[in-house]
Image 1 (tube, helix red, strand yellow):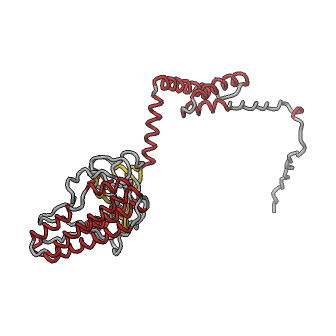
Image 2 (cartoon, one colour; image 1 turned 180 degrees about the vertical axis):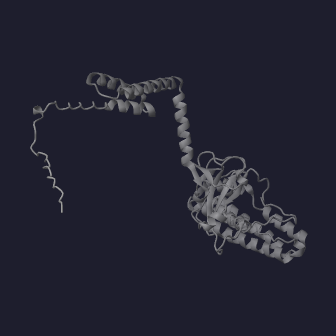
Image 3 (cartoon, one colour; image 1 turned 30 degrees about the vertical axis):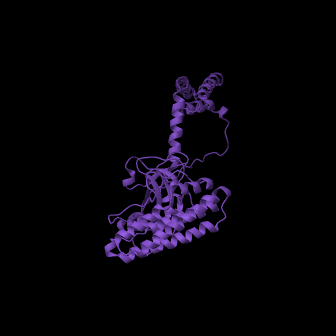
Length: 396
């Protein structure tokens, strides 16, 4: 057998781990690059101020300083410094023109007015008792509104919140017509309690309210907000004359007058011929109210100047009661209305004015009242009915 020759393996060279001085080699080491110069900070500040137009003179000054520093120190940022200087120069020129022409003042006034108006805007869900507000645009009284402008009651305004009540007894939304019916009745009571002096309510003031919508009801809104509104006009000052804002003398007198008026206005709905006994019962109730309130006026300790007129008013109540007693016994319609009108005419407007003056109440009768009774008349010839269910008043 012939054996193949064996080749010898040459030795594998190894890499030396001993460091070698580059100077002993045949080439020189590669030179290192110098570090880049820093960016001038003032150039950045100048550019930012120039872009945002904030303090333009400062941006101009910083730009000029940064250009000087860049030239001396060799720093970067010359382009930013130039741009900042140019933009700040333009802003400074515009500012000078605005100051000279008064344009900046007008712009600032417009800005403040816009901010003030935005801060006064409030959702109708957030209106509170005593808030005075303006409606958004013409015709807003007749359309659904979500936001109004709340203003100081001393300034001109279109409406004022008297309070509100919470709708109870309905798990699901009862519908707008049902809520309307509730509001018509109960907001009258809320408004009467808020403005207890009808003479202090301006002519043309009407009852107004905001109802929960189907959407807001789902979110838990069950509050009806009651208010006074001047449709197409404005008023100044508040109509608020409630138990918290009146003194004891004013409160006693206004409650007495209100009790008489409420009873007189509670006339039956039917014609006299269809409900003669109902009319006679109404006359008896009016007579009782007059007797009770005469006693209230006499039993109160009035301040000096009001004592005499208050006593005279009590006497008028008693004289009026005599006529209402006759109406309660009348057997025919003509006699009934003769005696009831005599009872109303016995209450003199001049006596009421003489009581109001010393008490510090409004002493000028409402402009739309031209007779002594002030009672609206229905088709049957008697005073029209005005009813109201006691409302659960809330802070709305």
